[in-house]
Amino acid sequence: MKRLTGTLGSLFHTFGSLILYWAVFLLFGIKPAIAVTLAFIVAEVIWRVTTRRPFPALWWFSNIMAMVFGLVDLYAKTPFMLRYEATVSNLITAAFFAAGAVGEEPLILRLAASSRNGDTIPKDRPEIIQFFRAFTVLWAAYFVARAGVFLWVMTAFPLTKALMLRTVISWVSLGIMMLISMNGRRVFMLCQRLGWFTTPAPVPAPAPLTPG
Image 1: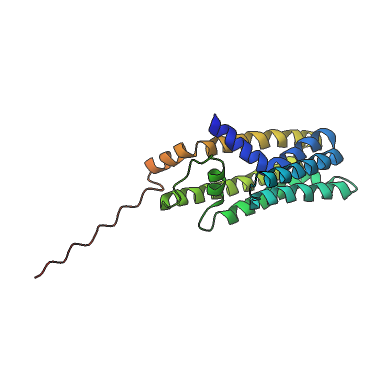
Image 2: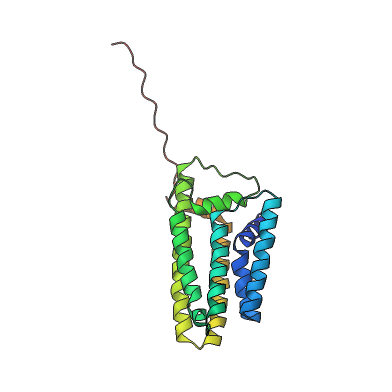
């Protein structure tokens, strides 16, 4: 339960602006959504500064995304982006995760390490790095798939029904991915049983030289 609470809290501090923007926008409209999002960002900045917490790249990404789509909808004569902004935002998020899969420390590994409350992850093990790299790619693929589903839903159904379907699909699919992520240790063990991400065999030491 403590791990679940820590993970959800970390995700809300990272993606809270986007979550609040969509929720308030669907319930009350664009102007209240922008106001609540701005208030959350200001409160988040104050909290991070006073607690000396960092501003990770994913935090900047989610807040900029929330404000960009809010400003587009605010100044548009009609909410023309309403049908397509979820698709665009998911594709941009997918690109962000795909970029985060490269490098020495994959994006999901950084997120997992920041939410484990001191329970360190052995980052010096190659199989651990490979697993988190694959997991980051999985998240990128998830956002690409979600973008495609959202595009189909928003063009195949009337707007009101499409928004309802998109909301249900969004939260159900995200819940499934979060459930998988929160059981990452079990997923890793299952992968190792299947022969994936196995621990490299130790290199045998060279035999000592003996005089001939």
